Length: 384
Image 1 (cartoon, rainbow, N blue to C red):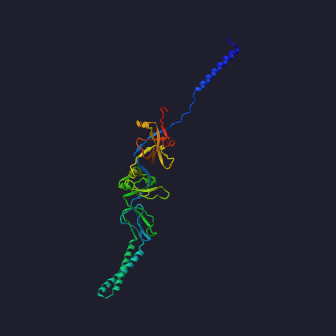
Image 2 (spheres, rainbow, N blue to C red):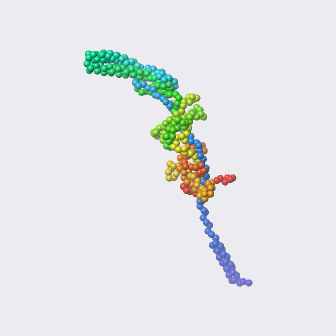
Image 3 (cartoon, helix red, strand yellow):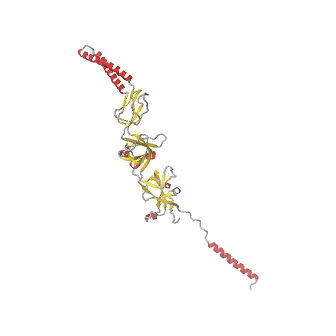
């Protein structure tokens, strides 16, 4: 039997051993490691697609291809106005006539003076050959004759100017004056349009105008570069050719006016001022045969260093995977590729830039990455 004193010593010894053992065990345990940082950003990738869509659409307006603003060379009171808007006229047809009483009176006076000076000149010419008159007297008669002849010609012209005739056959587009109205020289009496062709003008944005190659535009002047549709028959397209474009912008606008021309349609009535839609084939005008790429709307972002520059992030698979031919690796980095947005369509954006058919770009999460950043392709798990 252990004494009470020895029993207490035994319990203390066992407790001390247990404490030491617990302390040792506790010391052998490692401290919990901090959570690992995410090494790459999850993104959704998209395989870029080459698009053959090079047709840009613009609102346009119809204008006459060849026209003339008919006007008198002299002023006066309108005595006859023989045409109305919408009327067809023939070449040399009388359009309008001024009151010609003053012109006829001036012609009569000029004719009389010419007759007198002409007779005097003929007599002096015969006399000077015979020596009956002096050379100075003959020269004076000749000068009077020439002056009278010039006055007669001028009076005849003034009388002819009282008539306004059509320089070619065409359609009277407008008549901005009324009969018996007093008009001034060069005031438009009627606008005459030549049939056979029409022009359509539209505004081309500055960004696209910079792309146009003038030599290419001239080369394609006789080929179809656009199509025109009209509101009455939107499903029918009429082929058009490039004509010219303005070299300066209009005040307050960042666009240039471009004119295309086409034969006048014979199945619908098209008049100047009507609206139209232009479908322009940019591939025949731009400086190079650059490809258009279809990318998602969210794939194009702005460069932080240059807000005016649009970029997409091209995915570069890890070098080890790339060397082994695994271009579809889910891990890699991204690099910025500058692109130019040409236009948006229903399922994305059409852009130009140094992309390739096998490129994959960041479609979702493009705003979260930066140059050289490690990314991992995120794919939707089955059943989610």
